Image (tube, rainbow, N blue to C red; front, side, top):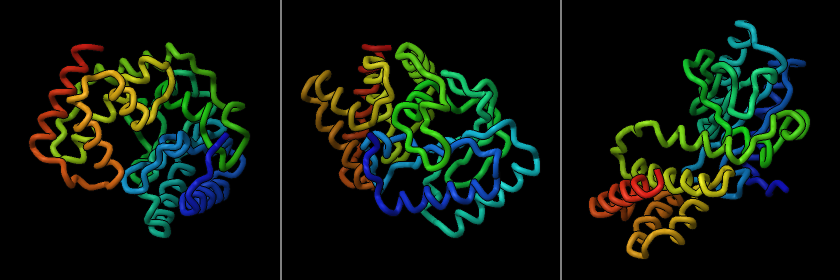
Length: 249
């Protein structure tokens, strides 16, 4: 069962879905909210609002242009829309592993009509199907394909195999560590996992001497600032990253 949403998020998403109905009309199949908020791990200071818009067929250049205008006006009217991150996927392109081709997406509230890579993966589809909150259209389980635990694990392994970008800011360092913990936990469970669940998994798995850096990363996420994250903590995070990758990957 979906958890109650913060009133500001509910209002934002209802307005977002209403605007999309006006722009896309019958081409709109569904609007779904997933990610941390659908799994009960939303942090107001740092979490994105991960969404998936499913359409009937590939959108025309005119429709893409209309969406670009809509997103620009929506962001001006709702500054919190900068949290919006998501994809516009034709229903027939959806597969358990994501989509068969790259699809338009939204990044920090800005619509991107042409994307060079497939951004959705099996863990995203699994999360949206099992936990997604519908703001338009039928329940996500009626629209999205089923995803097996092994397909989720394969997606996580592929993500972990990519060379991560150097994390320079303390907030990025903390987030990178939590992303790793979440991914390793997902390898064990075969399900989309939250950062809090990943941290709890790590606390059960690693030696107690690593617990302070895990707690520090969670504190940065909750506050949205890097207070208390110093050079010593950054070195400990990097060392724990190397240890876990060597142990599990």
